[in-house]
Image: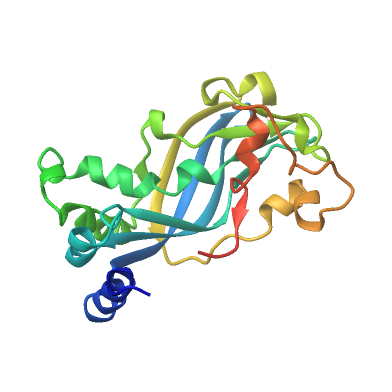
Length: 229
């Protein structure tokens, strides 16, 4: 093998050994969906573990594609069970960055942060220590889905968070969404309680099939839960 071909992996190995390719910040994060119902306030919540990888100076300067922020999540979607087969599920896709994004927009130096390579790392550290609830901006709310038949994932449909009464019934509204860091463990089992087929893989129509572009069923892949980083 030519020396030039060996140079790139060798450089990466030496750089990782000496400096590391990224600095990771991890925390457990609770999301709470706040509802008003005909019977009074109601909440649905869940805890996920998130990890944000921040490139080191070595990675930014010497590795191709090594300058980006990388996020990972472990846990499951947030389930709101209203009974009688009426369920709303907030998918993972938008939950992962929710706290970090909210903290970012609270920072006084947000306007200058794009020019500061250490700002992203500071934001993640601030999020990891933010144990008080913080509102998620409406445009950053998680995608919410429901199912006409809980035993058939192909009956999934997106729900307008501003009009959940069309799915759940008159008098039900989603008023706000909050997130916070927590020491509580990652939530397990709530999705399987309402969608048992995703746990057993039996007695239901499989969701793992080709779907048209933009079909809500495509959101399920990775949107309901992940067991590890």
